[in-house]
Image 1: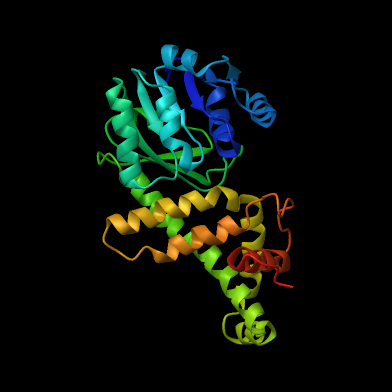
Image 2 (image 1 turned 90 degrees about the vertical axis):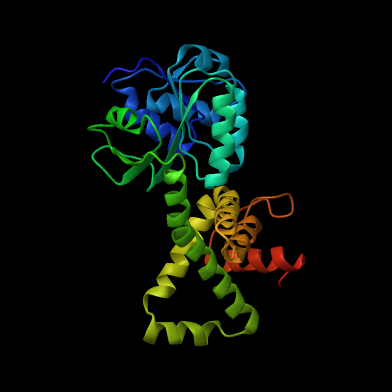
Length: 286
């Protein structure tokens, strides 16, 4: 299916990979203005075409795909104000945030399409990345990904259903990672780590390895998840459900973000626990 040049804003790890699966059949454009050398390397490796400016994408593409950190979703939509084509927002945002992005897009004459990505960045030969689509135009856009490593699935005509599903899914996967890390930090603080691990060994043997895996995932990706937890909390709150679980998860991931006081991200479970305790108390845990 030919769609003309496709704009991609902005090629992070996921965005570059998604753009890459389309680049074999379609020209996929990105804008290097204001982006980092790391973004340029990812885009080049994925086969994307640099057209320099966001304005060039806005004026010459019929489809723009936004894949960015959730806290940037509104600003990225504002960058293409006046865009007249289909704007696919595939970010991890609350349905209410999706509606705000849709308002920005539609005010400029564009058509909003809701998206939600579940799974890791797509790789050749894999179908482990699901792109859920909702709203008018979903079936047409899903055809772009036919035969690629991205499994595009149309949910419904509901304009925020894809974002809602993403929030529900990530509430468990990333929320429980934060919970496990907090539990390990609590056991360490109370001096009960050995006893907890012994009890887990007998009753829940998978949790020790899961907590080690949780630490690795949080170190490499947690900086992206703080805002996502806030979006999930907003989703619960808007549904008149308790939102404190994911507000706390946002705080946990926030404690792991690199900063001037801790320039090196924690790399082991012990270092993660120390970072959590330091971040909560504002003082060294030693």
